[in-house]
Image (cartoon, one colour):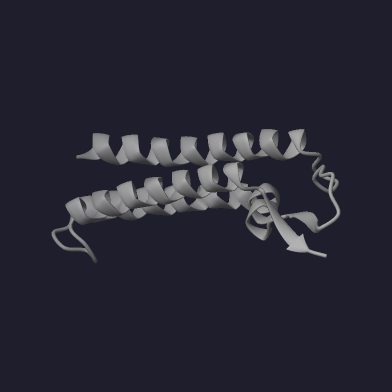
Length: 116
């Protein structure tokens, strides 16, 4: 069971690192730290709050895989410590999916259009 814990912990950490770097590439090609490039007069393009938060504080998300790994490893020797080990593995898979979807969505839609 500890192999799955280590695998999911490494996967979550890798998703945070790769998502952070992918978002950095997307935002820098669009002109970050300035405003995104856009030609038009009906709307104003701004960085989304999610993209700005992830770009500035995205590495804080590394605490999530660390906390999950420690809690899951502590619950491994006990029968039902908050959740059984299988429940913690399901939570770890869910965390991995949330991290991946959050970064993918933010990389696809880093900007918002506001009417002028």
